[in-house]
Structure formats: C-alpha cells, structure tokens
Length: 490
Image 1 (cartoon, rainbow, N blue to C red):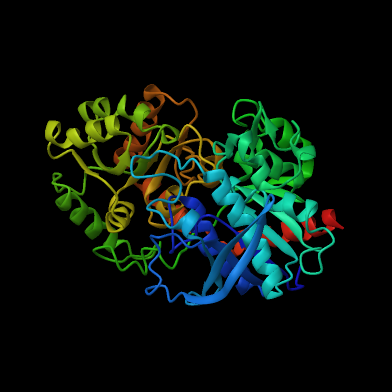
Image 2: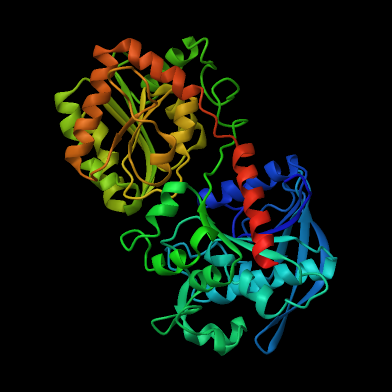
C-alpha cells in the first residue's frame, strides 16, 4: 500500500472553514492523515459568504474558470489556502455560494436551487483539476452534494488526458440525506437522459443524486461497519438498500477517526484541569467546576450524566425526555445538557433546571468550550440515538474516562464495549430498544456500578481512556479502499 496516490476530495463542508456536522470534521482531518501516509491530497469546496478569507489566508488562484452545465457555460473563480498544510481550493460563484447559509436560509428553508448549486460545485471541481493539471488517481466525493462526480468521470471524462485514469470513491455520511430534487433540473446537471433511469438517477420521477452516485462509484463506503450493515436493510437503508447490496463487497464501513490533538484531557486547554489515565486528580477538579458552572450540588459522590447533542429526531432526545425526570426522582444522579434544535425540546430541556434545581443544568445553544467541560467533568455520557452513522462524542467520552451510555446502533455499537459485571471489563453501557424504559434501566445499571462497584467503574475508565480511534487507523482503511477502487476502475 506504500505507493503514493494523488487524491482530490470534493465536499460541501470542511472544518475549519464551513461546518454543520460531522462531514466537515472528516474532510478537515482525513486529508491530513492521508498526507502523513505519503499521499498528495487536495480538497475542493464552495467559497461561502460565511468564510473569513483573511483569517484563513485565502488567495486568488485561477480566474476565470469556465464550467459547462447542460448547454450553458458558467463562469467562476478559484481561491486557495495552504494555511493548514493540505491545499484547500474554493469555488467562488456569487450566483450560488454568496448567501447566508450553506444549504438553507435563516428560516431553515432549503435553497430551491440546491441541485444546481452542488452539481455546479462538482463539475467546477473536476474542471479545476483539468485546468491546473492535477491528475488524480482518486476522486473522493462526500455525500449527495458531490455524488455526481463518479458519473461525470465516467460519462464525460473517461477519455480525458487529466481525469481519464481517476477512480471514484463515494462516502455516505448519513443516508437520510440523498439530494432528491425535481427532474426539471436534470438538463442543467448535464448527464444525458439515458441515465435518468430507476437504477441510476431517477427515483419516483425525481432526481436522486446519491442513488446515481452509488451506481457509478468504483467504491462506496459509510462511516462505520455496523452502519454499513444496517443500511443494507430496508429498515435503515432509506430506500437505498437494494443499490447498496448490488455493490457487494464494494460497499464497506470505515470508522471515522477523531482528532486527539483537540479531544484529549492530557492536552485540552479548554478544561479547568488536565489529567491522564495515570493521574485522574484533574478529572475530579473538572467535575467540581462543571457542577459549579451549572448550579448543581457540588458533590463528588453524585454521578454526573452529560448530554451534548443536536435536538433532532435522529438523536433520540425526545425518548430521553420520557426518562430523565424518573431518573432524577428515583436515583442519586445529576444531568448536564447542552444542545439546540427542535423548539419543543429546547423548551423542555431549558425548563428542567428550574424544576429540579441542583440536579439538572442545561444550556440551550452550542458552546465548544462547554462541550469540552461536559466531556471532562461528567462521569457518564448518554447518546440514545435512533440511528448513528458513526458518532464522535462517544469516542471523545472514552478518551476523557467518561463512560458512554448508548443505544447499540451504527458507530455506537462499534466503539463502545458492553460492561461485563462478572469481570469489570468493558468501556460503557449499551441498550437496544429505543424506549424511555430501556434508557431508565441502563442508566440505573451505570449509576449502581458507580455506587456499588467502584473498582469496576475505575477499571472501565482506564480501559476507555486506552482506546485508540486516531485518524491514522481510518486513513489506512481509506488507503486500502482507494487501491480497491483503482482495481475496479481498471
């Protein structure tokens, strides 16, 4: 696997430039890890209005850049920054990217021209590679927004001097988002009507970006092995199961890594005190300060259960709402909750501290600093997700010795080892049924372990902190997938 590859990544998000979720974290970190393995990587993304060009040291790279869309030639410009090591190129188009949000307006209404915006991004990214003479071995497309890339390569660039040898890899970060739009946009996308058929881009009369990408990609992956298995089933595949199953061994799960330079209590600059598996004194300081900050009773003998989450259906916070008050009424425990999203859940969780003073603290919104405090200061961290492609917070929690309480789905199943009461082995507590009842009894199990089996609790903390989910492991798995894609392409 040692031969160096040239890789062009196309994505709608990349940290630290533009982020709405885990996609940005992956595209921000994976190229760095691949570069450390000796590969040449570039990232291509939109130049959104929200990106601070001065802060990130963007400079003009190429203008004008002509891009054929359907029967029209559109014009744009490209910018570049190398501030963070890997070159990141930005497609500037006032028509498509000079607006307030990434995907929707301030009222959370999708931009109606999203199919055109991201078809244009993808075509412009490939044209940029041609114009700058970057001949990739791999074009790595992320999610539906870049899923046209495998089709463009095979339909328009198969005989191209620069792009003709490129193999394509498509990563699905969340199969619930597929890019389904009216067929009236299909001419503009420019992929020939012979491809508008049910096993490619057509779905119930509409365009489905992801479906066509799955068909054309040389390799498809998602972000954990269990989620790959789940999405092959009708229950979790969101209509894509037959097409993913058709890929056979060319559809795999590769677990996301995490950035331990940012999420590690030994080096974390945001938390009240640093600590290591060998010296946990700092964790006690973090817990005390967390209790203070959220106006909880300051008591090291009461377990703190942390929540950091978006309040959306997927995350199961409505299910947790059915259990949290019963837990507080019947167990010695405290909750610290950080999150935002669904207004009903914001109102519910925001109101709990007034009803249970000293036992529940909440912050409605998002704060990176508070997220670090909660990871460091809590004893347990709960994630009751209905589905979870990978999940990162449970992996952060392991490193901070904060034992995860999770529903065994997707990446949560892959990264948390179930507690064995006989031996004290394990790194967390898992349940399977998405119900308040299951949450209540699993939290009860964790709390009883805290009180009744403290040597087990400490042993689990040590085992959790020893886990390694660094990006290097994930990058090697992607490296293998790239080589398989090249063989498939050949």
